[in-house]
Amino acid sequence: MADVCKNYIGGKWVEAQGGETFVSINPANKDEAVGIFQRSKTDDVVAAIDAAHAAFHAWSRTPAPGRAEIVLRVGLLLEEHKEELAILETREMGKVLDEGRGDVQEGIDMAKYIAGEGRRLFGETVPSELRSKFAMMVRQPLGVVGLITPWNFPIAIPTWKIFPALVSGNSIVFKPAEDTPACATKLVELLEEAGLPGGVLNLVTGYGLEAGAPIVEDERVRMISFTGSSAVGREIAAKAGRTLKKVMLELGGKNAMIVMPDASLDLALEGALWGAFGTTGQRCTATSRIILHEDIADEFTGKLVEHASKLRVGPGLDPDNEVGPLINEKQLQTVDNYTRVARQEGADILLGGHILTGEVYNKGFFYAPTIFGNVHYRMRVAQEEIFGPSVAIMPVKSYEESVQVANSTQFGLSSSIYTQDVNTAFRAIQDLDAGITYVNAPTIGAEIQLPFGGVKSTGNGHREAGTNAVREFTEPKAVYIDYSGKLQRAQLDVEQHGA
Image (cartoon, rainbow, N blue to C red; front, side, top):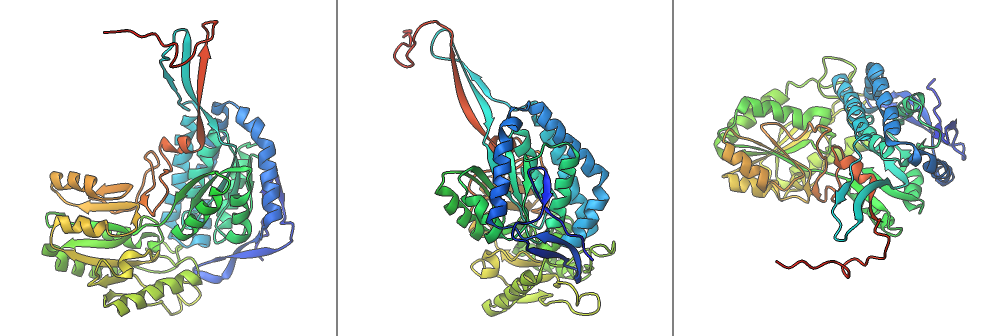
């Protein structure tokens, strides 16, 4: 029988006040329960916010290098438990084991990087316009922050939010996706083991409307950091706006990879396979559109179909498999529905386009790697995020048309171009309307030392990771120190010096 896991509130592992639970299952085998988790509701969220609010003062007064030391210890524990966590992630989320290891490694990298920021919480010193007066800006924590994370990177994305929030001096209410609470619980256990004081981080598991919405609505929560769909992000922004709290949104993508005639087609082919079908296409940065110059479109499409047809699909714990299951039945039906939409709109199904069946697949949520051909940029499969192993092929006549097509969606997260021409590469860096641009690499593979996020409907202007991470979780405070011993009036008592 699966273990029963609890919420973590005020430094204690507790059951939901309503006594309800839910089960997390293995998407490769829906008969296997990964664990039983608390179905938290408003009373549980309020208790978590109470605990975070009570812990904030002492934690915010803890010197930043001391806060960072705990984060570093968590990173070392993640290293120690890397294989265990990767296996758990594959069982709960479905991605192949090697990708699970990569997910945990992102958490390790973030811990080490952000721990260094504990001694680098930079402000500014600037000259004052008045004599005997010192002017500077310092960074201060926000207070209680609510972190709502998705299921597709159940270790990495929580660490992207939790670690900088902690180093910055905030206390936290953390609600992971209901599909991956086991990974979140294990991460919180490591934070507890590293010595994080009780109440500084509080975990509530459950569903969005029941456990996520109360975090957004409570006035004591001064910031919401959310990664998920654009539709939910808009609702969160609207609700949070009523209490004027800060909102950081990382939302959807419809990422394009452009392949020019001078590109290394073998390299671009490798990138397309990894970008489109890695993580079963369940990445906000997944390569969901491949824009091909007409001079190489037929050749490249043929090679892509040939190689994609050989991808091994199956349970992620089998090291021979390259593509795992979709996360749940709902997503399986969503992906299959987009194949029907593609057919209705006149696209060709060059590969796949069906739910996989058979002994290996019947207990899971497996979908065949799918390639749509003859796709026009106005089709829904070229505009809407599918979040599955489906990619659209879109031929164009020129570089200018490739950029126009790439920029034609509401999203602007990641982009890519394959070319050997340095001038074309730099034009693309300037022209592509996205928060991330890759040259001679697919649209996936972000590193934690650069800002992550997008434009248009992909987000609201904030960025995760990099030096931006700390800035997002702090407020700048201007400080003036007048040691003149007399009243000085800014702008009124400034000495005028003529030329």
